Length: 259
Ligand SMILES: *Cc1c(COP(=O)(O)O)cnc(C)c1O
Image (cartoon, helix red, strand yellow):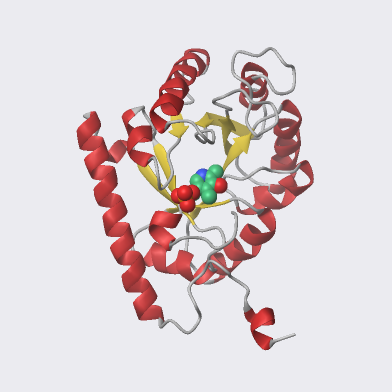
């Protein structure tokens, strides 16, 4: 067993030998490029850039990258695994830095108690049972309500994540999940989140999402956030009304592990 094996803690992260200044310059350049893409996408869509928030997806990258991004003006970060996010958020807080943490990954009910302690927003609620568990955890573990986006499945494939649009399923139907969150004492229904299905053109995916979001907002007019778009498709998501884009690899670099 080589020593390298035991020190390879962040396979997708910056090499510890890379000086902090070099990493800072790299992140600054990527942030400038990403902000320019967002601004151009907003211009093309006739939207005010202030309407679209950037979430830096820091999964697989160390807390020091989140701290550098915060220095560079990033306010929101996204994570998809509790066992990685909880210590990272604690490290950032211990450094006295305030970031908004968005939980964007599949969430198991037994992780809710941990997630409600550091997350400001959970974007991946896709069942009534998960909403109930998150509500109970938030009631016990927080002193203010937790913002929730319901994750919706654009292609209505029940095998993958996401609540099912146009479906009366009592646990997975979008209407049932949204109503459960909206009536929860310790959750605040803030909007929808979606990921373009594999193999779909972003245009087709986000056009369909915009239709789903319009119906959803008719029932929940206060829930106006729409989290859609990643490194590869943020322009299309902005054209179809995204208020939040979740950008990982375009900011931090390609991940060597599946995230
Ligand atoms: C990893 C991830 C992202 C970021 O993806 P990139 O292609 O690296 O920008 C966005 N949303 C979710 C749900 C993710 O898991």
